[in-house]
Length: 188
View 1 (cartoon, helix red, strand yellow):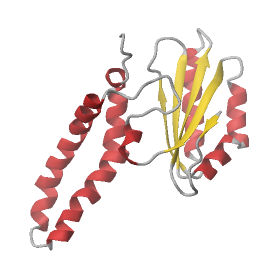
View 2 (cartoon, one colour):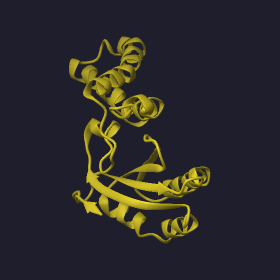
View 3 (cartoon, rainbow, N blue to C red):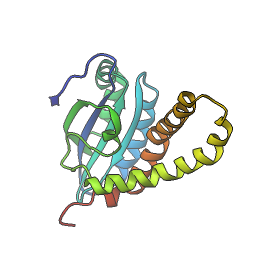
C-alpha cells in the first residue's frame, strides 16, 4: 500500500482497486451497495464512489474522509472486515493509495489507479456545464435581492452559494453521468 499521510484534520481520499472474478460482477456490484451504506454510517465518511471505467474485471472505490485518522479507523474496523469476509472468492482488493486532496482536483482525479485524470479540456467543459446553470440561477434568484447590500457582502454571496453546490451536488453528479466520456481510454 502506497501512503501519503495528510495532516490531522485535512480531508483524505483513498482509492481501492478490486479485481473481480469473471462471472461474479453482479454479486460484487450488489456487495458494493451494502459496504457503501455501512461506510456512510461511519464517522468522518464524506462519500464513496464506485467506478468501472475499464474493460475487464477491475473496479475502483473512491473513498473520501474528513481526516486520515477516521479513514484509518474505518479501514481497520470490524464492520469493514465483516463486509470483506462476505466477498471472499468473488473479488480481491489489489491496490490502494491514500492521498490528501484539496480543491477541485477531487472532482476528476483518481489517485492510485490506472485511470488517468481526464484531459484538461474535458474538465473545463464539464465544470462549465455544472457552473453555468448554477451561476445563472444565482444571478436570477439571489443577486436582485442583494442590490442594497455592501459590495463585499454581495461579492461573498456568489462563492458561498456556488462552491458548496458545485462540490457536493453538481460535480459529483456530472462526474458520474459523464464518466464514460471523461475516463475513456486514449485508444478507445
